Length: 259
Image 1 (cartoon, rainbow, N blue to C red):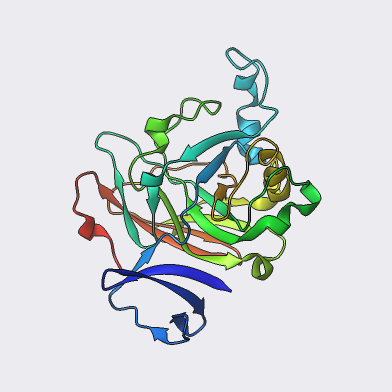
Image 2 (cartoon, rainbow, N blue to C red):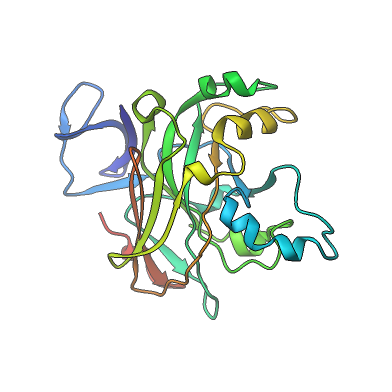
């Protein structure tokens, strides 16, 4: 089952998505001519840095020098603040004079409160999965991800929907692909996570409760690329969905969003 949130005539409407289109709760199909996609979840968005093995290995040498001295031994977390939340087929603004880099990732949607859960039980706390594009300015520090680089308005598109956990099955082994203007630019796989989804939930829930609707941005693969105003950026994840964003210049009107 795929669950989404859309805006119709200014009103948010919860829908399910099937092969025939979008359906309201009563089963009626929804027309898409004036539809606007909204982020399908509203909980806290927790990013996990360096959870892709190739990305971690590419930085191992620098981690052996000050100020780090050694690679991280626990998950490196950052939060995408509420102002970053963005939807499918919406505009993402590149700040003037800055480089902008998309970050394709599996989003793990928590289905019920999780506190001190065991890794063997952790997937029971997952409602489903969504596609996330964790936009950022280039980063100087992976140990201390910069708020200024990661928390600009609209810097975290997610969606278009949440695909239920039972439909996705095992979250390991999902291919993650990022394309710019139809050309494949970045590729990864959830099989390459340093910490698989279940371990992430277990380790995070050791010290904080995860709540229904929270999203874990489980890991961006190595090889970030720059994007420019006018680019169409798509993130595709096997069995989950495809999320599209349109890059605009900072200050461009929000009419840059498309439906």
